[in-house]
Amino acid sequence: MTEKAPPLAVSANKAALRQEARDRRKSLRNRSQSSEKIIARLKQLPEWQAARGPLIYLAAGSEVDTWPLVRELLAKGTTSASSRKRLIIPWCDGDHLSLFRLTDESELETGSFGIREPSAFWRNEPHRRPENSSIDLVIVPGLAFDAAGHRLGQGKGYYDRLLAELPGDTIKIGLAFEAQI
Image (cartoon, rainbow, N blue to C red; front, side, top):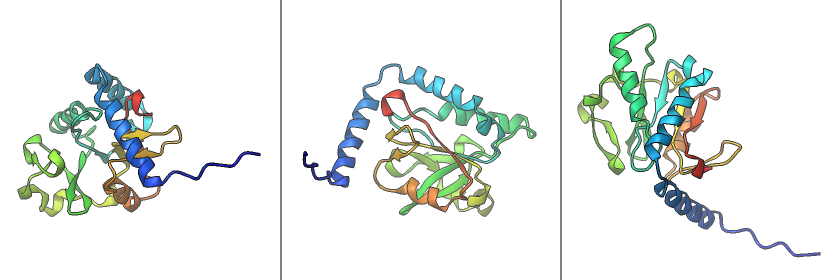
């Protein structure tokens, strides 16, 4: 009979996993082409096609690039009201994420952590701050994901707090490169 090793401290393990995931993502070649393929797959999903109020993170650094999708949705919003999705983005508001209905890229400025977010002028407009119940699908960033769909984030808990506030039936889809699984 062998003795089991004591479990690793969760925080130390997570810190090591985060660093490994960052390193793996940063070392990827053809990140742009891989992002395009991931976004193309996303757009084929019935859940995406049915969504009317998707919440999409604005990619920064080495994340799966969501900007082509964001720009496509913004362009469609000006040409076709019948197929329009209400594009919702998150922004750091103290220790939590607030929501904003984006209609034009010019409404953004560089904010917390170097991520683009609504300018102070726009974010306080009540008609631009959607209710959590209007979100029917969330495109979730992450450093790593497991096969069961669990995610490892940056460690600040922003998305964990936001996801806990959304209705239980909100669809969550994590975008990741193969190296992040």
